Each structure stands twice: as structure tokens, then as C-alpha cells.
Length: 505
Ligand code: FAD
Ligand code: SIN
Image (cartoon, rainbow, N blue to C red; front, side):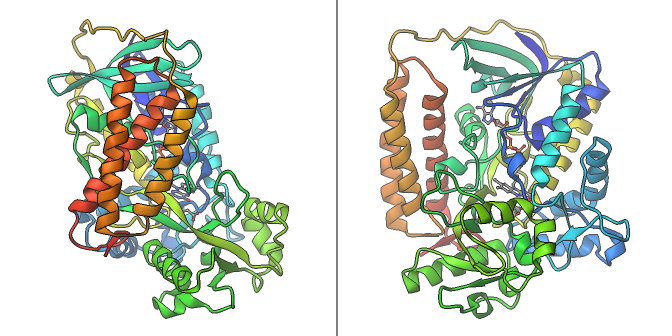
């Protein structure tokens, strides 16, 4: 199979690029492969919104740039920060033109929320379901284009490579178990986050770091993987099978963090108190929990106007209510959970990786915007801006867009011998447990060394198994999660200085 553009992933990064390139080249074919239903992405779960400067509030690019740099704790690339933030208003307008709806205030301007690390309200949102609304709008746009085909339940296994050039990817059709050789002139990795490596995560099941693992195996440069962002306020629910986020926008709306006995502990840690950046709030919660031995801290919304709360956060209100938490009188139990990976596949300003014809965009990429800790609501913005940068780069590089066709060997699947699903499940559980305990918010060198050796031994096991067994999506996800675990551990061992979201003692 041949396509002009192969996009792996159907979140904000992949779809934005697809929509743009499809309009410029109506005669070219764009194929999006996505391993679940098309809408099942981290994007769909985004709550708080997109950080974009709006002049009418007295905000200025300079302030947003400064907030981002402070949050990144000295490790952001300032040029990248300036480029991304100044493009915000244009990229937001495009989303609006594609049909995404954002909340407005009574004066007819975009209603702006606030989150940790921001010095002013600047977060454009759609209630507490901003990502759901964006994904809805851009997926509808992509589906309306004749030259875009979306192959759902298609899992990208490996990149097709020759001499540091990418020629597409081998893709498992999850329904037929056939392995397709999809050749493309340009390949874009837009595979999102890695949350499942930790298990206790705000990310959905699709976030297994496949793109980062695949790029690593292909020899691409991967950077900053030690900077894992833990969101301070995931809902604490012992019985839940997945972790529900309580948006930081609620603290931006005036909620306070408290210990079980009511102490507003964030006042002890940072002058911005509950609105300090995420790394500081998560680390402070971790310290409090270690001191008290409790399982969680609490978010107090009881002083907030209930009608206003429901208007802004209807989904969170409903979820709490279903669990018997009445936010008018009860505090919400919360604790930190893995949320975002600041590092990933290293790209330049044009989204180019270190492999020719291979681009990366969105959470799987590392642009230099986030440094040691991402500023809240800068991720959706980064994906929009880099999708646009890649598009602008490619429409000017016509030679890159029409590659010489070649014959590549097909990947013959082994049919006979199936991998024991219990092995995959047990190893995945053990991996998540290991990462949670040994590679969490505060890390210790000796725990990292233990993790490294265990991960390496799992890696050897799966490499040996792959030679003799049928490949399944679950098996490959496990292989990728182990690879991502190794990257996080190795880069944590290599880092000698604590910054932002990285603490090693
Ligand atoms: P995703 O949206 O995750 O899309 C990845 C796609 O790749 C999916 O379609 C997936 O199925 C596919 N894929 C992965 N591997 C493969 C494979 N091997 N083969 C085929 N397909 C594959 N950021 C903000 O800026 N503001 C917020 O308010 C905000 N809130 C958040 C709330 C939650 C609960 C979460 C989890 C994240 C939040 N974030 C927020 C972060 C932000 O949502 C993500 O970083 C961003 O949406 C990532 O977009 P993406 O397109 O890079 O990846
Ligand atoms: C949130 O709503 O708290 C998440 C925002 C983000 O991850 O940027």
C-alpha cells in the first residue's frame, strides 16, 4: 500500500496536520492509522483548555512567555517558547473556524480560566471538556475531506527504514491480524503520551508510548524523558479501574488544597500557594502524604458558588456526585498521578526528527517548549503550532513530498504460536508497579538501578518471545512500555541536577 502522507495517531497533532495538508494538496493521499477508535486519544480527555493570550484582559505574549520559562525551570528553549506563544491566537482561530466551540463571557469575549503557573487568566475552554469538543470538531473536519482515509484499529508496529530514511511503517490490522506494509513519502508520529507505563495515570489505555519506542528503535534521538509530569489532583478512588482528573482549573476558580485536618498546606510551600506550578504542588503533596501517612489530600470547593461551579465544571460535578461527594459540603479526595511526558522524540522547529522524512508532533515529540516542567494548557497549543510548522515546511519542500518508490520486504506474521495473554497482563502489572514505586515523583539512585536491571530483563524476554510468536497489539504495547521505561530510567540516572519535575535524592 502506498500513501503520500502517513500519519500515526488521530489526536490533535495528527488530525491538525492532516486537515491542513489535505487542503493544500487535494490530489495527494493522506492515511491516518490509529490503534483504537479514532476519537480515543489523550486529546479527548483534556479538561482545562488551551493557553492563548487575549489582549482584552491586559494579558501580553511577554507574560505568557515568562510564565512558561519560569515553569520550565531554566530548561526551555526560549526561541521555541516565543515562537509557540506568539502563534497562539492564529492557531486558536483556525480551530474555531473548523467548528470548535469555546465558552464566551457575558461581554462577548472568550471566557478565560486560570491554572497553576499562569500569572493571569488565559485558558480558553469548553466547560471541563475542552478536549472532547476539539476532538469532535477536528475529527468531523478530517472525515469530511475526500483525500483523508482513517484506518481505525490499525496498530503501527515499526517504521520502514533504509539508511536513516523513513519510508512508512509496518501496521497491524487488529481485526484481521494482517501486517500491512504502508509506504509513504512523509511519515508523522503523532502517537501521544506514555501514561500506561505508570498505570496510575490520567491518560487513557492508548497512551503506551508506542511512537517514542518505535522512533528509539529506529535510531532517532529521544530527549528529556526524565521529566515526567505528575498532575497534583487526580481523584482518589480506591475502587476505580481508571484515574479521573480533577482539573487544575478548579484551583484557578478558587478551590484550596487541604490536609485531612484542614490545613492549607500549599501556603507553606510557595507564595503562589494552590496556583504554584504543577511540579511544586505535586512534590508538596508527596511530602505531606509522607509526613501524615494518609492516602490522599483534599480539594475544598465548599466556599465556591455551586451554580457557577456546575456551569464551569459539569462533568467533574457529576462524577463527584456519582461517588457520593457533594462538592457544596464535602472535600474532594485527590492525589498526584502521572499525567504528561515533557520529553520525547527530539524535533527541530519544523518538526523534523533526526531520521529523514520522519516528523513528530504533539505529546510524543520533544520541542524544547516545556523544559523541566510543562506549563498547564500549553500542550494542546504546542500540538497546534507544530502541526502548522510541519505543514508550512512541507509545502515548501516539494522534493520531500514525492519520494522514489521502492520495494520493501513484507512482514510475514507467525500464525501458529500465540503469546500467553496472562504473561502480558502480569508483566504489564509488574512494570506499572515498578515504575510507580521506583521512578515516581521523588527518585533514588538505587531504586533506579533496580528498575533498570528489571526492565532490561523483561526486554530480553520479549525480544526472545517475538521471534517465535504471533504478534498482537497487547504484546507490542508491552514491548513499547518496557522500552519507554528504560528511556525514563536511563535518562533519570544520567541527570545530575534536580530541575522542575525531576527530583533525585
Ligand atoms: P493523543 O491525543 O494522545 O493522540 C495519540 C493518537 O495516537 C491516538 O489516536 C492513539 O490511538 C494513536 N496511537 C498511539 N500509538 C499508536 C500506534 N502504535 N499505532 C496507531 N496509533 C497509535 N493539555 C492541555 O494543553 N490542556 C488541557 O486542558 C489538558 N488536559 C488534559 C487532561 C487529561 C485527562 C489528559 C490525559 C491530558 C491533558 N492534556 C491537556 C494533555 C493533552 O491532552 C495531550 O498532551 C494532547 O492531547 C496530546 O495530543 P496528541 O495528538 O499528541 O496525542
Ligand atoms: C487540567 O485541566 O488540569 C489539565 C491541564 C493540562 O494538562 O494542561
